Image (cartoon, rainbow, N blue to C red; front, side, top):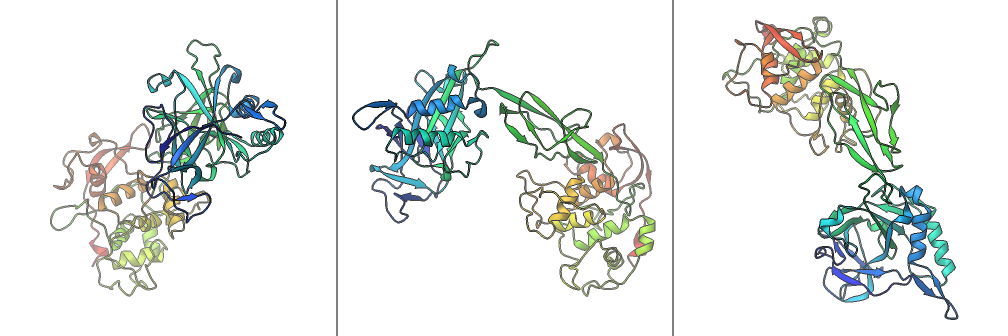
Length: 522
């Protein structure tokens, strides 16, 4: 399609209040000039954006004119309004443009970036950033449709081919077809209507902006229909409601966490009888989280809440210090049921670096015999090394026989030796990831973190400080306002308890003497 002269803006700048088109390129972006990687641009190191009008007529052979370009594009959007999720398309306004990245010193030299660019489309005449919120805006991208054509019929065929291959997922990946009609994600900013253009979709292809005044009185005034998806987590992780275009298929990939429970999936109904993996937004929807109470593994003692952390000789518990592999083996040894400990009890291990007279020798040997702990190398346990998050998750998961066969639940565990164990422990709610979605499997774990995780495995969960008792053992380095206060008190005090109404949390009912473990540590 033929383009008229347009405005240009430097790639490193946005628009001035939405009056001119702009583009922002990430630092380190590399450019190809006219398809040649080694050609230099005439102008500045940063290219510019050419914001071109798509002409509404085209001169055919013999001088006759036929309506093409803008009219064809808009008609394709209108004709496919249902598939695009666009209501009352004939009641909307349209604007068709090309976005061409060009050499700032020569507008005839086209440039291609090696990564996504942020494009700012100026607000239509009469609309400002302050008033834009009163309008529904949609941007449609005819990917692969360029300007090298010779006849009106060829253009129409290309438009039809693009419209036959629609992706109505906002901001979704472009189709692998050469020509497609893509719905772009838009954000209203003070610089204009923002959209992110992927390098694979960027080039000499047109965009159509469509807008209409929002309906404020209950009638149909041409706006795009959006519906709200609400997540009812039933006591688990809380999620904000989300808005989606009509007919969007939403993948339900959120994995909420609830203390003492295992997430069983999302359901379409409150009674939890219809499990679903995705949902089509044909109206406002609510999905419901299903849960199963996480039981204590058979070989661990979840009934008797005795102290499994004793503190150190200096009278402190050192919650923020790292915890060693030998210490963790000892903790789980203490937490075995009497039957499991008696069945596997041994003082002989295959590890050359675990001395027979070491205080932890029996614990390490017994846990190795159970298949719960492993060495870091053949015959090497590395007892004094800080344990990692991945190693700790593996120990906890080995107490549970249920395999994990889903996708990785964290972004940084693919290919890691402990990935399956980490996923397995996460499903049970025993371990959690970092705020950025990672797990950091090779990072060492603190004593407070270890106590928190052990308490989750055993279901030892006081809810507030009011659930504890006066006269309990306290620690100078475990202040009541510390995030780990309850976990440390639970781990270092032997006590009787009762379950609260939620059947997950506990209230202490009496204090008991601390267990004497020295018989296993001579």
